Amino acid sequence: MYQIDIETNTSSEKLPSTAALESWISAALKSQELVEAEVSLYIVDEAESQELNAQYRGKDKPTNVLSFPADIPEEVGVPLLGDLVVCAPVVEREAQEQGKTLEAHWAHMLIHGSLHLLGYDHIEDDEADVMEALETEIITGLGFPAPYQDNLTAEE
Image (cartoon, rainbow, N blue to C red; front, side):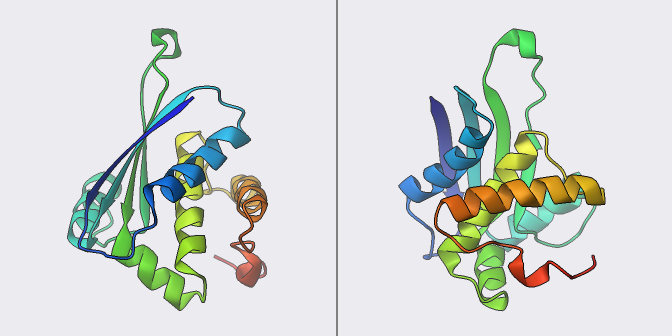
């Protein structure tokens, strides 16, 4: 069904279990009724996240999650969706700042990143509405609180 490869390069001791990480990515993939998919998850510290964010997005700071969709023609028949890079210290800090449990924020970041691999985006307001609604549906379906409930009226 789904192959999720996980590699860690972080000093964080607060990582969710492998089973939890896999279940959250799988929940996003199942939302699109994918039968087969492969995703690589790489968990890093701030220095590596900052380096990747600067190199690929031109933003010289660490970030919570980076998504790198695979660019493989459909006719090749390889189910590789792409790579996710998550910065554990940023996720931990954001969870605390936002008053969320660490588990809920990890789930949100992995679902958010996975949806990017599936082609969802939030650059335009209408795209953001669609993506956030799907994230909320998946996350609440897993028993977590809605991730955007505190900023529904906030302007970005």
